[in-house]
Length: 430
Image (cartoon, rainbow, N blue to C red; front, top):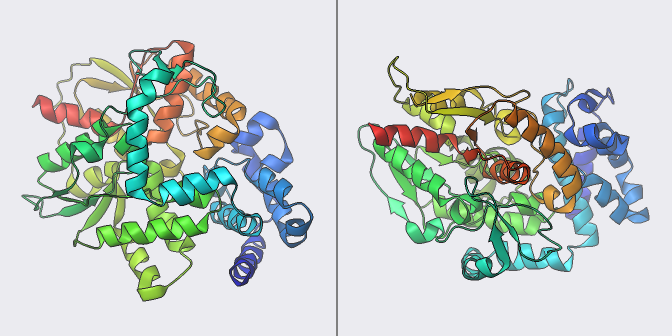
């Protein structure tokens, strides 16, 4: 209760900044679909103003309304008062979860699985062995599948299946010295790259090696903690942060790079403000690591300098790019992924309408509110299709899953790739 009281006081101080101007309405993807004031940031902040009373009167109802949020950061990026909406919502979820407790399913997912990286890996490897019994391929160019039988959790989604071999089995660890770059990085792989998109993780390694960058990739990495903290589970979050911090403190590196927009956002922005305890200088170590953390697109363009093709172009692929919210809105990374794409002489970049509009994924939001997520995703799908592209690129594996679902259901056959894959293909052709 002492910790909850502290968080409540922090919330009160942060809520006072909001002017209730309603600028968030214009950019909120959820409000655009539902038209409900309670679904926009202003409405949720008004609800949180009376959180102390609501906590005892209707905690479940308050939590339900608060969870109808993608945590995309559109409202924060458009707020004239600079209200840190994402931090406020996450703290409110922690308060409510601390008061009500986790559901039995959440306890299994967060406390039993995610908090135990080795156990989580073993569970997912068993899932790989049996997934073909329960799934059926859908769209071959996209590589999507769907469930043979109706599943309460998966529903009628078209999804990218688990990779036959996760990346931690392909390359358990790595520790190479820097070459001509004089730079060494720690590579934070992340759950989705490890278990669904190992090809992206391999592309990162290959590109770094090409540029003479030393790579430290410790064995047994864990989740970045974003799924846990966004559900209000601060205990699992703290555990994962401490675990990963020890892994990457084992070697001195110049930067930490990731190819996942959400992992980058979590380590750089969420870890420093949400770590609750300062035992053994934990907060100082987190802040130091956060400052070193960088998205792979920005690292390659701004730190290393990418290899560009000459003026001769041979367009083989028409590519459009979707801006992940956590990259473009929260971290300001937008031009760099496009630069990687345009470095490939076989690719012509064509911009889709509203490239930075949320695709509707939102992690657990997609599981809890699939209809709203799909409605938002269809707008993104339509904008992609208008370009006539053969490849959709984006710097977020969660966005890749959402876009693949939307395109697969419509029968569109464009491939979905990460910009670092497109750049890697160019380097391999040299």
